[in-house]
Image (cartoon, rainbow, N blue to C red; front, top):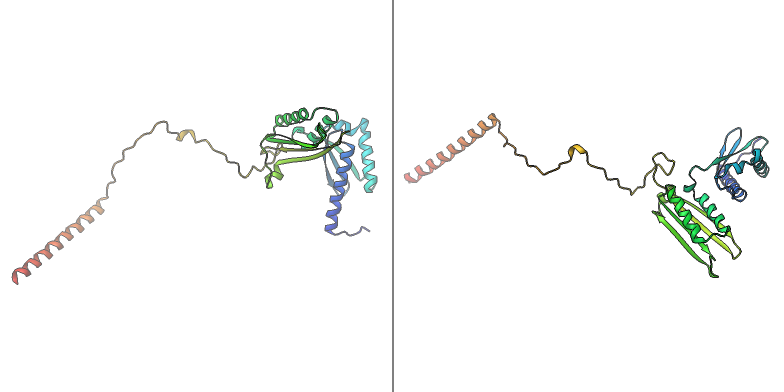
Length: 265
């Protein structure tokens, strides 16, 4: 008989499961360019899709590596037999993935490449991939004995509000070097894409689009127009003339009566 679990406990359990799964894949598949995972749960089985830049290395020779990962996850989280499937999916736009670029920068620094050269290489690759902006921060003991931070930016970047959550991809990694630990932060600002592939479908709330005027209404030179005065309709004109005639008669009769009274007195 299945045990009943409250919704609150289920959400917490799902969050802990995803966090531990992500941490496990991050440690195991860091060299393969791991960029995240998705979990799909159906009534029959649970599917885990691993996103990475080198999917062939995730699968291994004849699928050996993916089977080993499936067995480890199944044993750790106590899944029943044949109820768990792992798939590998290639990251389509590697230049727009902050996790992929963070891992790439990490391995460049581990290989002994200069910090400035490695960061500028990441910036150039991200901007050439169609990003709107990029920011890379490396902090720690870079060359001297004293720790410091170096920031490299290019393009446009927003930092607050809901658009920052929708448009900015963010990743943090740590590099264990002989002189100490370096911290890496990568932020990538995506552009607006109506199809939703290179960026969010919803445009920025403060973006203003200036439309071009239609071609048929463009006036090349100033012109003047002469219009005829409005002609009053005949019935209205006759009514007005009758009113004026009546008014004149009344004024004339009032003057005559006042003159006759003065002469009589």
